[in-house]
Image 1 (cartoon, rainbow, N blue to C red):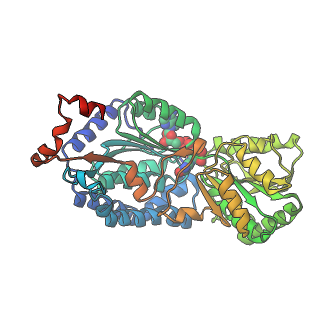
Image 2 (image 1 turned 30 degrees about the vertical axis):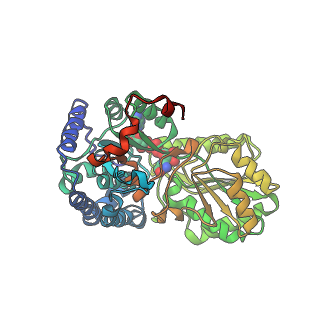
Image 3 (image 1 turned 180 degrees about the horizontal axis):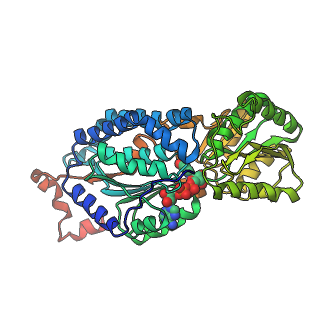
Length: 468
Ligand code: NAD
């Protein structure tokens, strides 16, 4: 990481920022749909106009290739903010549920009320989309928001501290920068919703802090997303699609394939497929390839190195031994085969370019392997057999289920994105994110003329009515 300009928000400022946003929310300025649409278009404008600055910041923070920033961060921010602006009128429409004839006169109504002033805490790996995607939902819902981006992506975090006030209403949207101390200060305050994306350890701290104020919470977490490969599937295609998912952002993506369960007799064919795909993607290796990213910081580089070191005493085989360069935090993809339950590669989320292959003897064994562990964010399965697909659908649990590809589910924002169990809770993307920040406010409005029909509820109740 180059020297960075991250300026932490002074701790004493943090309660004042929350109070100022709350005053803005209470002024009702965020209520009109046209105001929200303007903010959403401004968010899209910021992403588009400042695309070069975002590319530069993410290159400095994580050596993220420009193509990846444009496709994975800037593009979806622009497209989804514009679409949210176009659709928010429909999302926010008051609803009149179907009720029995006798209750129609009471005018049962569901209004879409903004939750209020909310806190969004985001991580470093896709810092732009993971900060602005929840923000879009908060804006669309009519909320005010504090953004707390990650100190591990300092250039990005500083950049948005400078850009957000230029494009969005600074009385409604603020950036607080810093690390655990600033986050802790934020969490001492009462919020109307907290949206946290990151690791499960910090999520527990966030959840405990939210509980003190009974604050509703969304947790978008990670974990080990398995891949099941059916013996009849084309191993070259499976390998290519899995390796692409593993190499994207150097494996630092919450939905990265973490380990592969493959029929024992197909393991070597799959490995050959990985070697072919690797050669095709990076003919001179990934070490110096500008289409391949770096590990975010030394701490994560060392974590991955020691994870691989621990496998040395285990009966596993490294079939693609990636080169490393600690000074540039470059870490080539490494594939390890013959891994089994209890080995170190299965202890924690890998979150880097290391892939474990576990040979198995049946589909039932693969399913049992997945079910014996915390529910993953995604379960990937390569199979064209409808019976196998149905068995996986029926017998497993995961946030999402993806057949015959990796990561591409993220390109369908109409689908809800969520974890389950240890991988988090609360569905996001587009209207689902809007729903997170929206309270369904029920209402009835009893007409004076209903008085005759209500007579029976008033005491005194005759003994016949009480007995009936
Ligand atoms: P990180 O280290 O950037 O932390 C995330 C945020 O938590 C940061 O803003 C950080 O400042 C804040 N934080 C740190 N300590 C805190 C504390 N004590 N209290 C409150 N906040 C605190 O990112 P990370 O956690 O390393 O992110 C990677 C993890 O996130 C992986 O597990 C990955 O799978 C998961 N992830 C999930 C999703 C998803 O949408 N489900 C997306 C991206 C990443």
